[in-house]
Image (cartoon, rainbow, N blue to C red; front, top):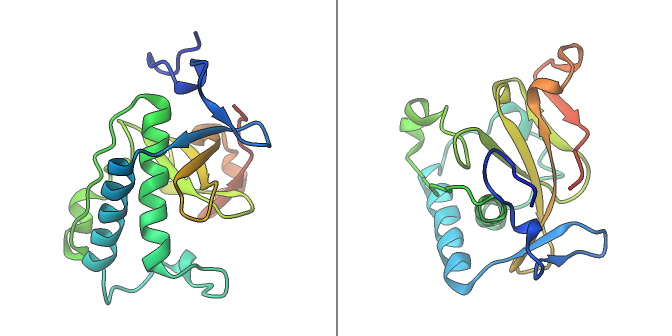
Length: 171
């Protein structure tokens, strides 16, 4: 069995489903789906009327937040399940963001990026962490496709301005 940081990922189990592209699929149980959707909506309402960060300003490519926030939470939960790591599923009011800004999405050092197409975004603030990338495999996000990961410290400092697009290690 392959171990990632001492945990055995779901990929080592015989009944793991795979996408047509050969990526692992994590199927969310009904209660997991409901919980992650609720976390996403709580994150959305906690940040009502808050200005988006500069890298979210291209509104032409952004999905409506009421759809994106639950999908992001579902991807975080799926990555945690795949890795056998803890997902806190936290949300807090925008005024408390500074207090929790260093809290990783999963475990002790994992950030999760949900993509719809294209490359994953790696930010300067992700240094010292691993960024895992996932996307919903179906319209309802009942199955999440795990696309891969990048060790952020392996990304060349030369390409770090504020955002870098990184190549993923395929699973």
